[in-house]
Amino acid sequence: MNIKYSKKNYLNLTTHTALGMSLPVWIRLLIKNKLAIDIRFLPKVLFLTGNILINIPFQLYESLRYNRKIKNTIVKSPIFILGHPRSGTTYLHYVLSKDPDFSFCSTNEALIPNTFLSIGKFTTKILEMAMPETRPQDNVKAGAAKPKEEEFAMGNISSTSVVHGYYFPKSINKVFDETVTFEKGDPDILSHWKARLSYFVKKLSYKHTGKRILLKSPANTGRVKEILELYPDACFIHIHRDPFEVYQSNEKLYEKILPLLSFQKVENKFIEDYILYSYEKMYRKYLKERSIIPEKQLFEVSYSDFVSAPIECTEKIYAHLNLGDFEKARPFLNEEVQSVKNYQNNLYSGMSEKTKSQIKEKWAFFFDAFGYDKNN
Image (cartoon, rainbow, N blue to C red; front, side, top):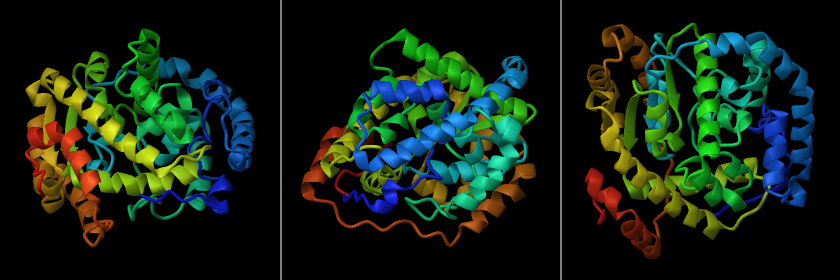
């Protein structure tokens, strides 16, 4: 692992995922982290603060105009894509999002969650001009209208999102425990998360005229119990991947995103330990809670099976979860599959024997649960 910080990272301003944060959330975030900002990231923080202040009138207008309608919106059987980061959740999300009967959280809606109903068309144009064509961690297509993790929206409208750990990575373990596995057991934290997620999902549903909502946040893999308390009729699609590949891909992920999003510098070893820690915590909770999901509301698929036969796997998902008319959706799904048929996965160098041993030891339960080979 090799996290590199450069002058370009310090001055990366216009595409930061906190651009659409509300002022109360921003203030709480800074206070909670005791303003522990690396001096080199200060221009980024000042720019974000200015942008957040400018957005206040738009946020107030949207709240006053739409709050009542949003709160009266009914959400039926949302679909949650689960899986650890870098397990294929994005590919699965992109494919399913092509079904015209589904709605999803776009990048614009995730980054500007407080104002997308009123100025969303304008911000979409701005983001399209500012964003790169592909994501920094891989070659996956990016864009304002592309599907995005609603976790980033939660980071902008609430104090309970794992993305806050990307901004202040020295606190990332604590953030994970508080917002993913809810290990503090604080009922206020949990109720706040539920209230903000419910509001945002209703807002998406209101905008997209009641279409079935398709959501994808890897952090939700550790929140099954809490999601079912909100949505007893929710459906879950869990995609899993070889743990060795997931570990290496996560190293690549953090190498790319931390210099862009963080306000602090951290050492490589710190993040390597976090990957091992968070994976174990999240999947132990998922495997404990998986049994409470009704059988017809959960479908599990391996990454290797899905990438080798995406349309066939998706047809099985539709049938098992009763997601609708697959034949009607097939041409739209196939269009997405064909558009990425020449996609090249990231290449990774070999892992040290020490790292392999740590993965085998700490994640042994996952290898056993899903039949992966520890000696691969």
